[in-house]
Amino acid sequence: LRTLLLGGTGFLGGHCTRALLEAGHEVTVLSRGSRGPATGAESLVADRRDERALATVLEGRRFDRTVDLAAYEGSDVERLLRVPEASLGRYTLISTGQVYLVTRCPRPPYREEDSRYTYDHANWQYGIGKRRAERTLLSLASTHGMRVVILRLPIVVGEEDASLRLWAYLERMLDRGPILLPDGGRRPVRFLDAADFARVVVRLVEGPMPPGNIYNLAQPEAVPLRAMLEQIAAVAGERPRFLEASWEDLEREGLERAFSPFAGPWASHLDPSRARAELGFAGTPVEEYLPRVTRWTLEHRPERSHPGYAQRSLELAIAGRLG
Ligand SMILES: NC(=O)c1ccc[n+]([C@@H]2O[C@H](COP(=O)([O-])OP(=O)(O)OC[C@H]3O[C@@H](n4cnc5c(N)ncnc54)[C@H](OP(=O)(O)O)[C@@H]3O)[C@@H](O)[C@H]2O)c1
Image (cartoon, rainbow, N blue to C red; front, side, top):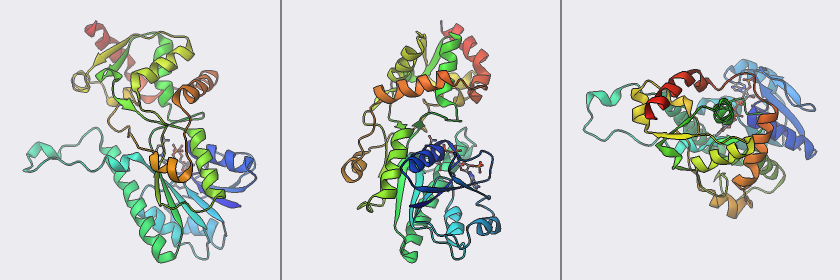
């Protein structure tokens, strides 16, 4: 099948491209060209926010399937559907569990401080943009007679993850300093193996249309973050000392939340039971995929640190005070 992957050169796009090529499909990736595509894929370079550039590379092109890993706004979807004479086939939009997290608002009556800028402004924008992309796709699907599926993902863990979130913890384990764990890491998390995600995309590309439009994907079990970190440490052969601290105390000390990227409130916790029932999605258990990805990361140590590591000396000073 001829497949178009918007964002096919990124972390998840790379996993999908390789899996689709291995399954014998033709893959065309579209990106702004900051990274090259996997060997064997056709590359189109355009900024999808630039209507003319998008039309230049896609006008008249015909695909059996489109997987959109780079729509962050409703207008991203609209612009794509306006490309003249382009045929996208069945369309899968990759969305996020953050759409569930952008529904809170301060309780009225509002006070002056309710409108202050918060550390998580970018996360709100991201979740709201994705929700708009979903809504736009669903409404255009009915007017264009398109068949669409939306996959909502939590934090994805896998090889080649340029966000370096797993490395953020590994690097601290390897420097052998204590690791501050907001709220003790007791909060259960439910991530997703990137390889599982790619398998679902291949199945959606090849198989019949599923009965529903929207599916959550996530690992089968909810596990406290601390237990996941202990598994990572065991693979690395390290025995880190975890120190509990509240987000409020850490914030008062001036530590930015980015230091612990798996621990924040923006890690969505999704129920994948509909995908299990209707897509036959089982999900690889944590104890199987986490050691695999940890070993890969240790064998391919990034040359740079996760951005939150820049505050490591402050963390160590706080840890010293906590004892
Ligand atoms: N990674 C996760 O844990 C996670 C979790 C939930 C949902 N998701 C969703 O999954 C999708 C893929 O995530 P990812 O982690 O693989 O992201 P990523 O590594 O940042 O990849 C993004 C891809 O989109 C391309 N891109 C971005 N803006 C573009 C534009 N304006 N025009 C054309 N191409 C553009 C990038 O290439 P260029 O920069 O070269 O353009 C790259 O190929 C995203 O929609 C994300 O919201 C990811």
